[in-house]
Amino acid sequence: MNCVMNIDHRLPRAPRLAPRAPRLAPCALRLTHHPSAVTNLVTRHSPAAFTLVEVMIACGIFFMCVFAILALVSNTLRNARVLRATKVDPGMIAAQLSLTNKLFEGSESGDFGDLYPGCNWVSYDNEVMSNGLHQVDFTVRRRVGHEDVETHMSIFLFRPESPPGRLSGGHSR
Image (cartoon, rainbow, N blue to C red; front, top):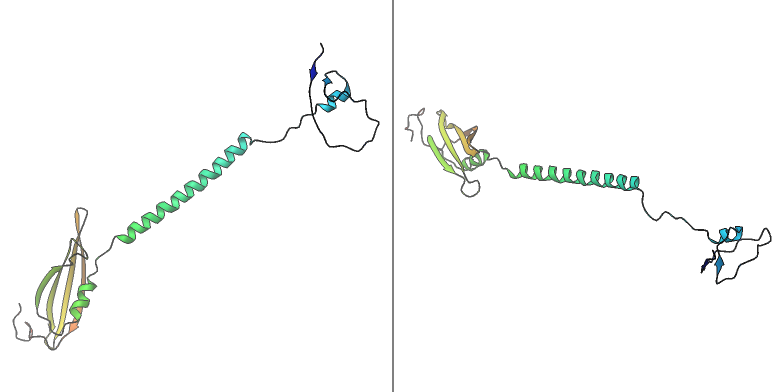
């Protein structure tokens, strides 16, 4: 069987150590078992693709990073949700009441308007001593789910310009 194959391999020249074998015609190469024919048909194998193990390790690292980022985002959103849930403090009402010069015994109530919808407050003013010392108790109620949550606070205010209360011979409202 006589096969002819056109091969144009241009390999870099190596230093000559031994006399060269006779060359065949450049346009045709006869496939024989001659040693010089085998050296001309050298194929090079280069790693042009990833192995399955390398791909699996890369996928594992990728998914660990993705799940770490998702956990971080989830915790950040949960913390933002907790910060958004505002708690109504009775100190806001106490601060407003402390600006007045006169206190009247009795109770008052109100709400917070659009600032805290669904929350209301009640204050109870009692004269503690006849010299104008008053104790004011505040209760703030808000609806959380199906439960009413109450917050309590008491303050003492000295207002000698206040009208006389029960202890100093006056009437309460």
